[in-house]
Image (cartoon, rainbow, N blue to C red):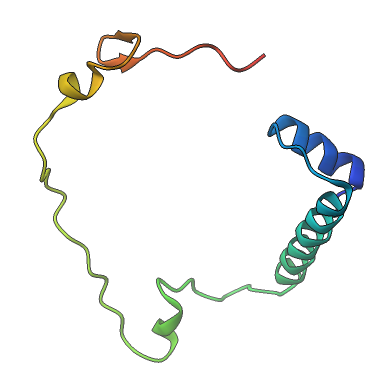
Length: 99
């Protein structure tokens, strides 16, 4: 998969970015370079290969350092939403942005 200059222009327009022609070309080269790496990775046969939790797990045992899921801060929703222009049932109200 690769993108064209027109597709880069469309993406920049959707993101509300104004790219100069040389920036657009550089972005096109970088994104297409990324896509070529992804395609090369997809071409590798990984049948029977077990996923690793961490790359170093191939050479040593890895113990994941997970903490207990405990709230460490008090609930300050009302205080945080006082400055919001519009709130309803604890949710911020924002203008519709999807056409």
